[in-house]
Length: 283
Length: 283
Image (cartoon, rainbow over all chains, first blue to last red; front, side):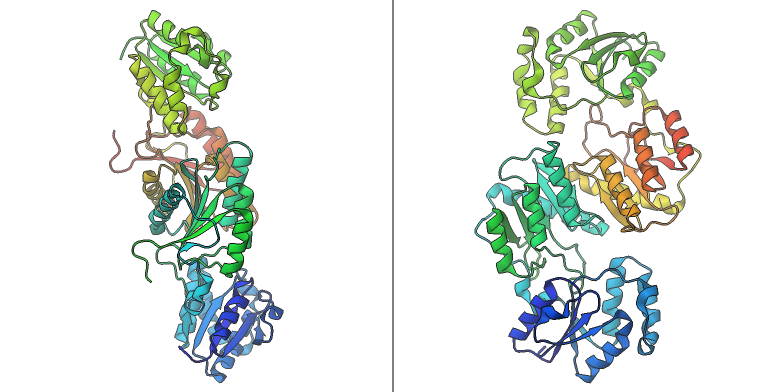
């Protein structure tokens, strides 16, 4: 995997960070910035073109012209409306594929996107393959380490998430007050953290010093190439505001973006963040 | 079990309903109404005394004087503060038992209460033993039945709750949009339903007609004598307001209070409510 790499970039800090890491490895990088999501100015002097989703045909032509075989999709994208695609002529022939993919949930759509690019002869890599530095490393990220009792809470949390995996739910949970106090489903991690913060603030939930741990992990079978769980500065802010003591992440399987910056923010907020390797993890 | 029965009554409609059912069976019933929780006027002409928690010794003396061996605890009770008990002299000797029970979570406290009464020679019955009419019967409660696809959602929900049981969490969940959209932990059932309603109202969650089912069940090993899951009119209101289509309850294992009234409210709101018997349920 040493040819040129295309980064199909959505919103957020992760795409520019990945572009930086890929370029630092000496590899030619082409950024396909998705219109309305990626901010082209965040990529500095990188080789970049912007595309609307309806310009997929044009993007494929450009990738082929550049003899790019490897690509990675990263960054968030508001779920597109099929009606708002405004496809160009060169994109029309691909629509039936996406029309099918659109009919399921988000997972289904993401799998459809990967299958599409693979069907077109590209290899889709995960962000962790290209920039493993962007994932949680094993062990503490900042100065604080989890205590043995906090490690127990994390282990219990990861076991809970694993038990939920067959039901295709449960990327995150919060353990506090000797029990599971919140489990994430459709509301998302930040809303779940806020809920626990509200319960603590109202006195409905009592937590002692050092209590309260957020755990986050991918579901079994989740496609880590296009759907990797992630935390960012706002996750730390919410965790600190809620009054929790730290965060446990499955090592190598959750994106943190800029680990140095996340460690700095954790130190500042007095939180621990630890990557936890579990039995059965691939190296 | 034909001697007199004591009903130790907390707040809500369930205690008067149980008192009515027990009295209708011809059995002498004594109501010990917990001060600040039970409303004595809701019990009509029943034989009733009110007690503060700090008057436990006085209550025990009264039960013995009446030669009552059987009791049932029902109704909600705000978690008492140990400091606010203001125990009478006759209660002081029981305090060490409760001081220990207070140190754990709610489950621990409830187990401590049951163990206390059993240690004093009483038999603690569950509301379902005394008034099985108060639990969800198998099958539809009102006019509406769940469709085969709604039954599938319920089965998936009950399997999810069973998978959560070893973690001592998960009395309720909501399945919609082909997936698990909410799992109850410390926030309680009503808050979980409201969360899903908010996601639907904001367009974050799309549900089709007939979609969206609340499931509720006890955890494995939950002591159904003092900690039975329950729904009431407000649950139905929240489910209807959220835009869900119905409720699945483990038959015989979830309190509904007045089944006729609940069926009437379900019909009025256009909801189905079904009791579901699962393999392995005791008759």
